[in-house]
Image 1 (cartoon, helix red, strand yellow):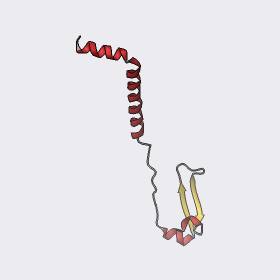
Image 2 (tube, one colour; image 1 turned 60 degrees about the horizontal axis):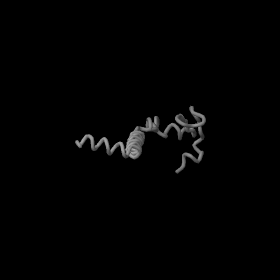
Image 3 (cartoon, rainbow, N blue to C red; image 1 turned 180 degrees about the vertical axis):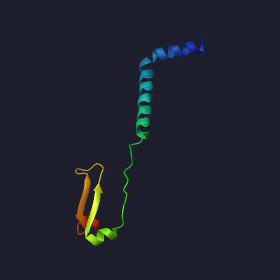
Image 4 (spheres, rainbow, N blue to C red; image 1 turned 135 degrees about the vertical axis):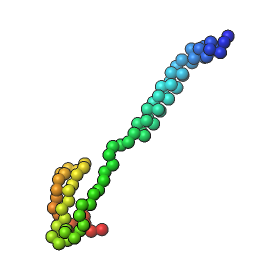
Length: 85
């Protein structure tokens, strides 16, 4: 019996186990590929002006964007707790 025939016989007798093993390897490979995919654009924060103009007027003008309820430009008094560390 040749080597190829022995492999065919082994696969035939263990068809279910071989199929499950190959399916598992495919699922593991797909999971690794999905895990390594980039999640999307990284969020960035950009400061456009210094606090000198904000402190003169007593207000902070903030451009709110991204995954928020109400995106847009917001004017907030500098006395708001968000500006104090």
